[in-house]
Image (cartoon, rainbow, N blue to C red):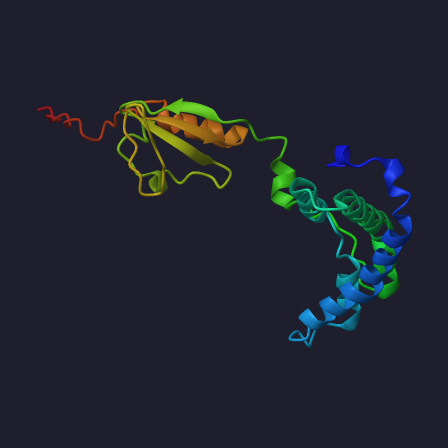
Length: 217
């Protein structure tokens, strides 16, 4: 839009442009804001004044000012130059003074960075990127629900792939041999999960038949 205006053509319209800026900034805009905010009676007057002051004009008025140029309206160049001058002056004058007016009105609220949760700060350097694990048939995790594995709080199974198809894992999801898990976890917890899914369980000797003891004599 700036390619349509020449700085030399803004000087002749500076007088009428400054007059329009004064009317907009101190009369028209404050009156319009105060009227629109009449239903909100609990809003402090300082905040209403601040709203009327930050009503900056942007590119929309300049775009609308191009319509007379397209339509070939008489003195369309002057209309466009005036609108461009008003927008530029309003942004420069009001935009640069917003912090000053906010402090004077007592509505200045600087942004504060939110503190990170202590758990995230403590474990930030220990966390590893997503690791892919494969559930081995006969492992401790084979045929069990994810909730039954009692995974640590810092372990999260993001994606489960079964036969090439992604599955959203939940606590009731039953793991099967051959499943591929995309996991995010810290080092010790990751080792624990790896032992559950990638190692076969050792067969217990409880089911073996007991040997019969024959007394002598």
